[in-house]
Image (cartoon, rainbow, N blue to C red; front, side):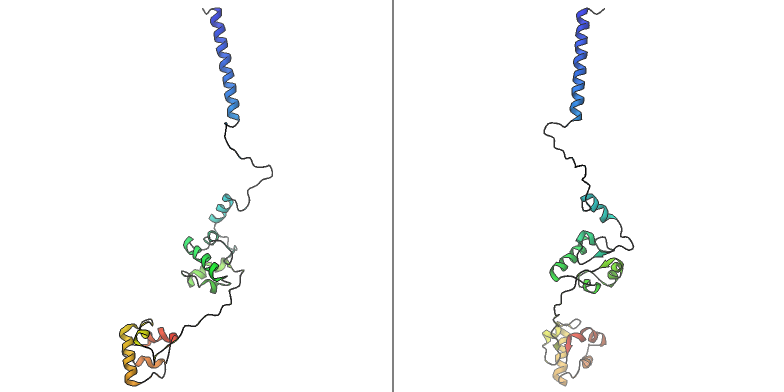
Length: 203
């Protein structure tokens, strides 16, 4: 049987244990020393362009009637369009910054990597708020068949040095070319080759 002193010691120990438990619970309900926390005001709400909201918007598929302004949208917004990945979206934004607004699907076609099928795919979702710059397009200098050197002629698509020499040889034997169509009289040059260079040459 416990003595009076032993019972007193047990009571003191139990009291200390309960006090320690209370202190620990109070410490857990607060913040640790040096801990930083952020408490939003009662009226604060996440803005539309917060990280979470923006992420949700970019992952959401385009609605049938949803439009994206290709003259203003950032690259991450452009990736929501069909077949527009991050690399192509970056090229679109870069081209827009250097050359100005696209103004239309035809203007967008100037970006490398964009072709007719891609334009058809994004057409239902594309809008353009800008106007293209009115800068005159410099026409390429036409190569004159009757005076050009073999080296100049060889730069034409589908010609090369062998056909270029044949053109010069034909010119030396038969005189200047009277028309672009007469180029088909040169050995090795057919209608297909002529069609490829027609817009680049003159007699």
